[in-house]
Image 1: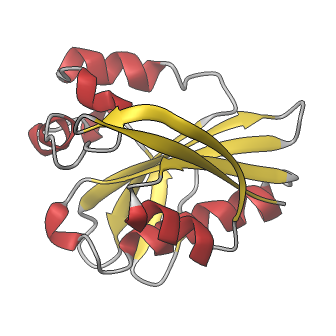
Image 2: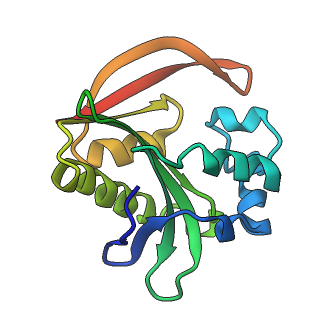
Length: 172
């Protein structure tokens, strides 16, 4: 786990801690719109489930990061990186929980910060991520970050009763 902040222009990434498990955070995880494209939408989240998830990152190479605004230090989302040091790879995930901040480039800024950190500082050779075809915003973030479409699993998951492709992206 990184113990230092990864700082950008408008936000910074730092380790997610128990003190970040607030009512607002739990509300994001139970908001059907926030989790519309995540398989987490099928679970109910509470303080105990959040603590249990946080504990899975202890003593591992994986990262669970808080996304905070530089100006007021407010938590606006989270990121994960599941790292395989043996293979030199990581699989990234992103959640911007504060809906009022959607569409303002915070997701792309956070994505680029972590992507750059993993490639340069952790010296990983390949970063991957996946999203549903219907999650246009997430696909746009991956493409704008320089990731390339690597594979498609046709009609893999259901969203709103419709089968959706899962698109996998990578950057070396």
